[in-house]
Image (tube, rainbow, N blue to C red; front, side):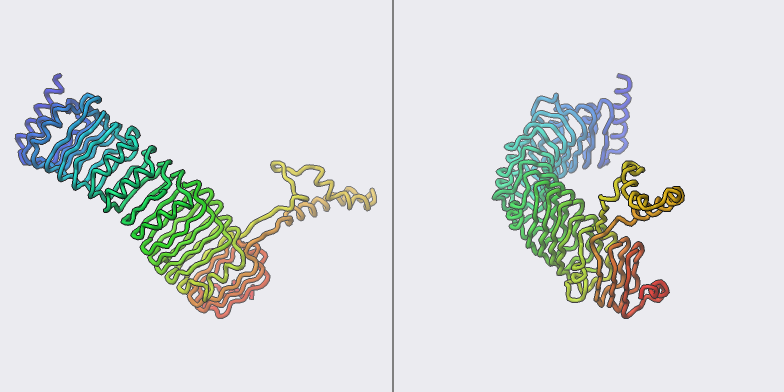
Length: 476
């Protein structure tokens, strides 16, 4: 009790000494409910932060006396006794955050409120009377039912940004109602909502749409997304039932597709596209992109990618490292007339598939089975006189080891031919299947051929690579 009294006396002293204070932070302070009642007496208080302990209902009734309060942040607290409705009524409040708070029900009547976050709070219902609210964050409010979310969102006609990720009960019906009542909605995050498929959902004003780990999103969902003509950012990570994306969106600038296991085909026609993030899509086979703004494209480790069609007037850098299934036809895409007239840097490292000859090479840990050795040596032993056996065996062992190292063959890029006036840098590191290389690139300054062990013929015409010239001559 003495400690509590000391805190109260200290807060009273601060309030007397700084009557014009505009911000107060009481987060984690013991006896917070008594201290807050002292703090709200500050006539010029504009921002108040508290949390970690219980906040009694008397505080919320006294809140209206802070006539200049603009921001209220409450973190990790029990509001009231935890089983009653918490009323928050304030005529000037503009920013309210109730994060990870415990309560049964909350009723918010704030006519000037524009930002409301209820992130990770466990109330069963939120009644909102906030006509100017533009941002609503209800991330991971697991106790809010689908109907409660629908009621809360549709009661805010000026809503522009809605984050309801990890609200697992949200349905397409709720999205349809939101689209009907919130005509100004620009940003929507419905990630980790397994019941969403976007069936009959129309959100024409959306600029940002995030749908990570939505099990209901399929190729059929692209029809609904196509209606969002204002869309600039689209994220579809971990949508495991998504097989194809085909979109013609004039304002799309950024698309993200990561860990989509069944994703096979990507078709994009958007003149403003500037960023494509596609990775760990093991089944991806075909990509067709048309954009006037894309400058850099990285598609590393797309092991099944075989078809790439690009009409990208501003594209300057391409990285296709470890795209094992690419074939010689890729050269046409990046040569003059192929659709990338500004291309300067091309990386095709390790674009090969490596096979083992299973008949002769069978490894068990680090040792080879004896019968494999005998299978290869026996034909020599049958025709050799007995007195030479001891001296022949070491030679035969050396021959077998040589065979075992040579029984690999490669498939992928074999004959590379580029004719590009803009190309400055080309990397073919680790492309062991390449046997011939022909480059007609007048501005080419750098070529990396490390690991191209089977290269038999190379032609560079003309050549600007002064520093690399001695190295290149041995291939000419």
